[in-house]
Length: 468
Image (cartoon, rainbow, N blue to C red; front, top):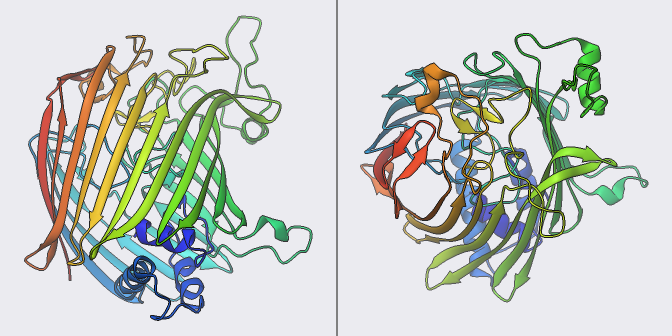
């Protein structure tokens, strides 16, 4: 779906932000259908993408009930996760029941995880309830989010960790402002959430807050502004005044007479962009993301960065998505000096920017430098083959600053030593017994040493999904 929507956007036929997931169905319906595109357009890649989006709309965006069951099994947990939705555990069985009405939607997703890494076998990940009020949606539940243009990782919020349960609201349709003074913003969307982190961390019951504003000032150019924060928790203030201090950025990086930081929370702020354009019958996109641990002059400071290039092509009767992505989670640059043990770490929230043992953003965690070459081939039969090769320098200074609860240390997938690895990801999806089947594998050229113990250099798995 993301590939097809991006093709339509890069060809200038879909005008809605696509780097904030989940994307609202309403933004993919009337805008695409009113584009005036017909089968005589002569662009096979674009036509196939449009046909796929319209087919998925007919299956998933209609009113009424939908039911899906899923079975997953693996030799070992999947250590490094990308945008693709692959299981995190050795074994999972789940069911999703969803009802969609004119102004409300409810989804229940009970599941059971075998040998769960965080000892939570029974889960409701993916469950939610939401209502529409005007052009806004208000909801509660535990849904996965991906903020940013990266295909393999995001530096501020990704689906690497399990979804954090909480409340949210977001704009329903990304319309441009009607005011002539603000019309330059173009189609825009906004989302904000507040979630509850787990109790087994250095500051138990801390909250995770986040907001993102994305807009398209010109066709094919998308800009995103993101901010997240860990706030409150056991022993920390949770007053409205303290929350306002957090939102306004006041008292950050201030020390008391005792020498202890008195800042209201642990914040991250980021800016990203993606610009796509046609290149003959193909389309090309360039993107970047920078995230800062601190703020200076209203902009992120102590930054770490991501750069990428992606292309959509069509060969024979298949479509392809290629991408080259570089992520560096060491703070600083060649000109500023590199600072280790800063990204995703904090002096007060010492468990760091993590949830149930996994980083909430970059799957590589902190102090990593990774170059990834990825390719996905979408066959005309509906199956697809994905391949990604990464050269990763993990935990470059060889230290882990995170404070990990002793009773849950075995679940933390944080590299504990400096390691240089080659990582190969392979996934093949196809239809089997009228269900969606995925076979996947991940190979590393050496075992990975983590805070939770040694991880095997090879893992394989399979999943099967069936929609009633």
